[in-house]
Amino acid sequence: MKRNITIYEDNQQLRESIEGLLALHEDFQVVGSFENAREILRQTSSLHPDLIFMDIDMGTSRGIEAVVQLRRAGLKVPVIMLTVFDDSDNIFNALHAGANGYLLKKHAAEKLIPAAYEVLKGGGPMSPDVAGLVLQSFHRHKDDASHYGLTPREKEILTSMSSGNSYKLIAAQFGISIETVRVHIKHIYEKLHVSSQTEAVSKAFREKLL
Image (cartoon, rainbow, N blue to C red; front, side, top):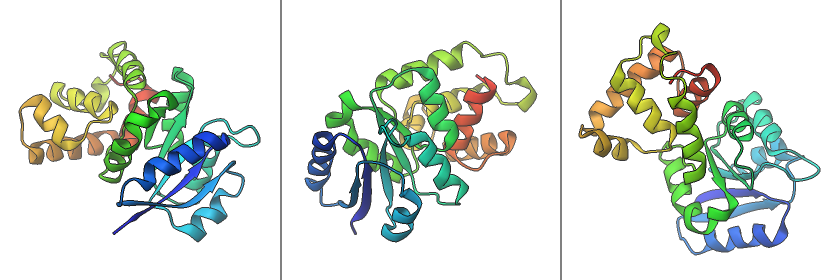
């Protein structure tokens, strides 16, 4: 079964390149491709995408604001930000708004398809540069999570989650089973009072938990 994709990107050449990349994979079909996100609520309600690729700055509209609109409307469709911006403010603001992944455009050719598969499995893909900034932020604040009662292993797993790693990759990283990873993540969600990977990572950023 094909997964429906919508794209929001004001650079026509890049937008068409993304369409072309997705067309090479039988699992995906582009159902909408737009130069701005001014009508994103109407378009999303009409097209029912399974995944959205979103530029941050489209001149007449801002991608982060579009994500906020989606979440306020109760639309939980995954959103991967595609951008040239690798500064921490844009990264954290996008994740806090409810984005599920963050890829730099310079990595789009290599990372876009794997990111699509990853986010549809519940992951949070990020470009290597972005993951590096995330980890630096976490490492600066390792002592601030005690009031949530996170264990050392839960902190490690939350850090790994922030890099966009899947349950399978986390299990391999720490030499534990996928089911054990699920249990740890369930405990993380309970302690942080969140219900998703995106919310957990966003809260960790916002409150400098790791």
